[in-house]
Image (cartoon, rainbow, N blue to C red; front, side, top):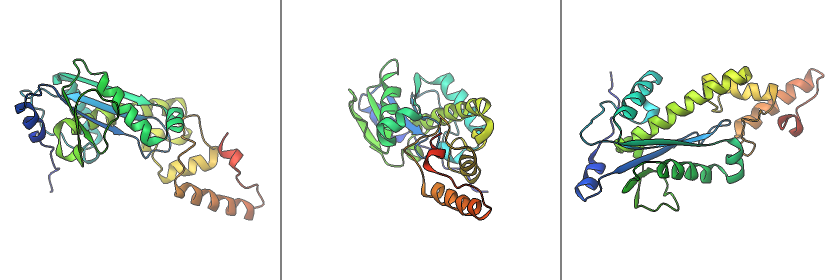
Length: 229
């Protein structure tokens, strides 16, 4: 059995030795989703309160993420999450929305961090120094912890949204473009929770196949208006 890779505290420890007392990690989840918000997490971990098992949220089971979420918030110096809903994603585009969510999460921390480690992209308009860590959710414990906070928060929210509108199965796929999600969109059209500006090629392929089947059976085909309802 192969063990899961664990994130390291070496980057954070180096920064602390340089005099940065509060080193935050920040990450987001939901960039590639068809529906729901993009959510960012930010956290400052205490160097003397180690939480074993922190790793990239994508390699953890849902049960492990829930357990680690509780442990992280229980020992963190400070933590925060921020979200931008589908209409904001459409207004800004997903890249800008992700950066804005991460900036909001960081600036919600109390006390503010002296240094920020961010996975993937530099966050504009931060007042404190930052370092982009490529593959940060695998390399930095602080970033991995932030990814867990964001993922658990978003998954819980998508389950709440499923209870409000169970047609799309948000509790199963969390808004990602799985086959059953695409089939639900083909059947019911987009809901207010869906991002109008994000339509993966697989969605068009599925709808075109549905159109051909419907026309062959003597039914009406889908139109753009159907999808926007």
